[in-house]
Structure formats: structure tokens, C-alpha cells
Image (cartoon, rainbow, N blue to C red; front, side, top):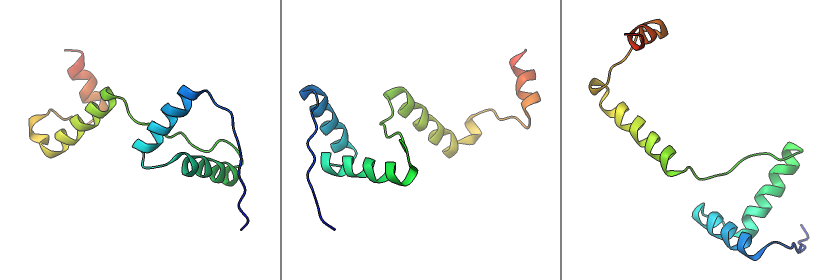
Length: 89
């Protein structure tokens, strides 16, 4: 397959931030752009959202994992009706 170059113009600060983001995802700029183009062609449009979770979301995931490890420490319900009944007390 023949390779070619493309040139794009982007704000310098956005480029730096994008490089940092892609690096945190294990990608370089070229790989990230190639990934985006390949997926766009396969899906015939904008194919996906890639993002890092914010600290609050990461904490929520950690809390869920802790709850899975120790379910005996948390209240559970057999049905939604049971949950709502408890909430209305």
C-alpha cells in the first residue's frame, strides 16, 4: 500500500493537549489520526468517542468494585418495589 502525508493546521495548544491525551492512551498522534480515519471509513461517519474518565467517575467505578468484593457490607433489594418502599420510609 502506498503511503502519503497529510498536513493539518491546528492551534498549538490543542495539538499539545491532544498529544498528551493520546500518549496517556498509549497512542502517538499519527496512530490516533489513522485510527480515527480507519474507523470513520468502516462506520461511514464519526464512529466513536474515546475519553478518559474524570476523577468522580473513576471513584464511582472503584466504589462499585469494592462493593462487588464485599457485598455483605451493603444493603441489597430483591425488586425495584422493595427499593422504592425503603426509600419512602
